[in-house]
Length: 272
Image (cartoon, rainbow, N blue to C red; front, side, top):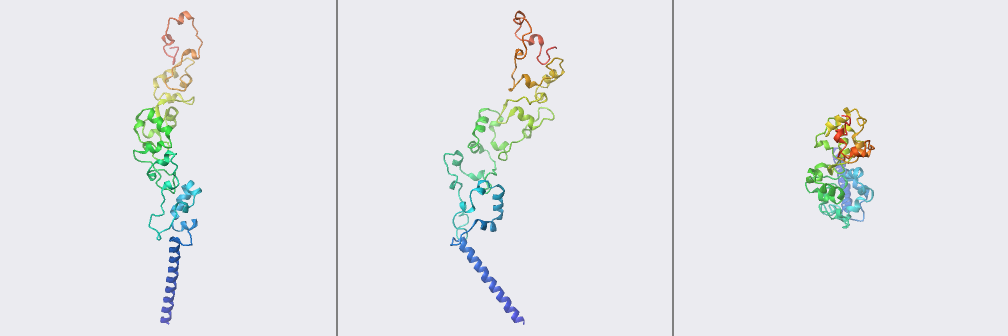
């Protein structure tokens, strides 16, 4: 009885080995480029992680091409490892587009299966950034500030990320947030202050606290005004009083004074 059992076990092992070898032979035939060709659905059997990466962030590499469009040829062991890894220039080769003339694509596009998951690092990124963002690079290089000397990745650690100014800069006044910063300061020319009518006196008071206090403590009709009503659109604009007021005095009186403030002391408290 024991001998029969041993014979059955041996026969089972032999049959399994034959099936395994047959399966390996078939797989090797596929890999070696036989008449049986790999299909897209075959890739996930061994490369599930990569297929998921494509599904999550493949962009056009997911929607417009199949695995074998890039990975053409013979799969190992019929070919050396790495033989199926294509060059980016296989598709991205339009030399009229400056970005495609750059070398070392993987310094930013580290994972070709998620090509828009761009990693920014190092000091030499501005050249690469300039090929897609020339307006921003020109802006920061033309308006010289401390920002000009930084690599783009100093602020933009992640592609398309707009960093919080307060990561590096102190607030002008207590309670200010990033949203307050960008009302006046443009990141690529931070000393060119421009703003719209939504800027509040509390924002201006961060730098001009004495003027803000004088205005709000006054008893004239100017007291409730927002700073931007008179100082419109651009920082340091000083309007003429006659922009709003008709001349209340005679020409002979006005001719004796260079400025209204010679009598009224300050536009921020004209009755002082």
